[in-house]
Length: 267
Ligand SMILES: Cc1cc2nc3c(=O)[nH]c(=O)nc-3n(C[C@H](O)[C@H](O)[C@H](O)COP(=O)(O)OP(=O)(O)OC[C@H]3O[C@@H](n4cnc5c(N)ncnc54)[C@H](O)[C@@H]3O)c2cc1C
Image (cartoon, rainbow, N blue to C red; front, side, top):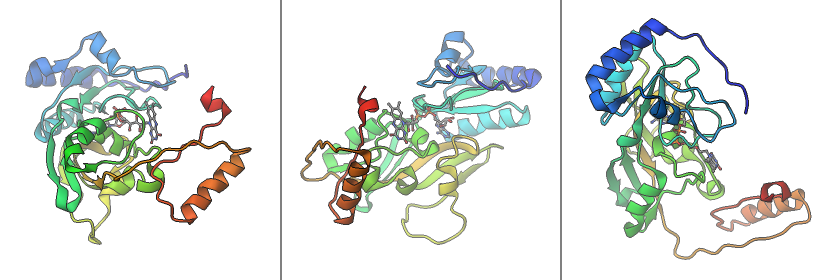
């Protein structure tokens, strides 16, 4: 397990923020060791570093209230979706408050005609696809884990479907986010075509919670293909496999997923 970086802690600020947030959030605010450990222990090779508390907001206003308290008292805020990230993303090297967004898990609207939907950040990929199935639609980004869509936007997730559908950067249309001072911003509308202003959506996608917490995500949807076929092929070398992939794409064959497995992967 790799060593984690330790940063100086603002003990006074953390104690004050804990007191204020405990009063505001009651039994949705946790300082118990088990809950804190659970929010630092992910599938990472980096040593876990637990936050000082975990809070479960249910609205954008509550996320904003938490961040305002933390900003005033100079306390770190760590967003948390489902904790499936692989590089110690949810560690709290200077302590702070973990904001678990899993309780913000509502699908707010599905605009089937426009092929888009609006979800809260705690909605997971599988939850959305189960909900969409009856309408013949699906959300194609599949990083392997049943991650939250807020977490996937924050890590700019991709997966085996990227060859056809791109990554989160290509599939997030707009975001609502609470910035580091507690202000709520909306980066765009649902319109797919716009040239107005800065592209704050792309700036926030992949920012891993460092710029703010995402509280609403507008996503592109796709039609479920009428038929799906899978195939496995062996190649004499990695180079030959890559050539086959390039040729497939150049011929315009609509492959949805491609994954390379070498001997080491399989082992
Ligand atoms: C088996 C496996 C296979 C994987 N394969 C791939 C792959 O092929 N391609 C790929 O791209 N990824 C892959 N991943 C990584 C995957 O993309 C991430 O685990 C996932 O996107 C994180 O989502 P989460 O909800 O678990 O976020 P968390 O792990 O909870 O958080 C991830 C980061 O986002 C921040 N965050 C979480 N929610 C928010 C929010 N609402 N607002 C702001 N910041 C937030 C956190 O602070 C943290 O920095 C894989 C993971 C696993 C476990």
